[in-house]
Image (cartoon, rainbow, N blue to C red):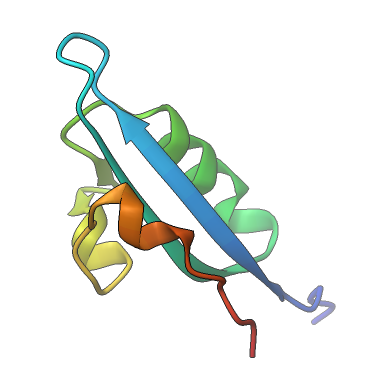
Length: 78
C-alpha cells in the first residue's frame, strides 16, 4: 500500500460564541493526513457545542478546552 507520511502540526483554535461573545481557545499537536483535513475545518467552524464524528472535542483532543489566556504558550512538535 502506498500511504503518504503524516506530518505533525501545532493546531491553535479559538472558538467564539457569536451571541454572547464568550470564547475558549486551546493549542494541540495534531497529525495531518488526507483523512483529517475535514476534521480540522469542522473544529474551526463549529458552534459552541463541538462534536466531531459524534465525539466531544475534549475527548478527541484528550484534554478539556481551556481559557484562551493559557493557549498562548508555544506548542512544541515532537
